[in-house]
Image (cartoon, rainbow, N blue to C red; front, side, top):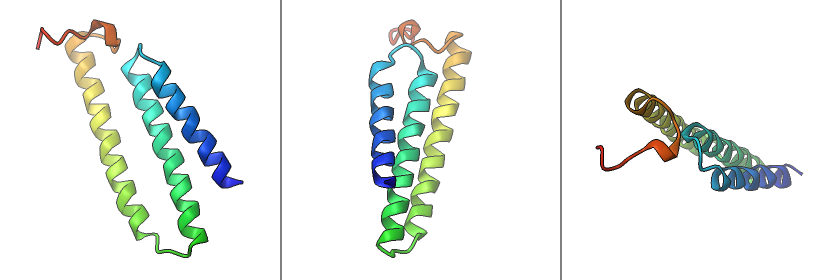
Length: 94
């Protein structure tokens, strides 16, 4: 049951990531939703297989660093461009 729930969460996160092209914040939130579903899937796999959960804490550390990097990019883009619309980003300006 948990496997199907995490798989459904993963597919919903992928759909939200692939169909929202407007805001940078929505894409970051959908990526975090995908990470949350992967965390649930790996946790259930490791509990059922009786593996040690240290690897999961190692991955969780990297996922937190990824979220922090995404948030700092969002703040930088909002300070530089004034909003988080993808259509307002001009690569020729950089």
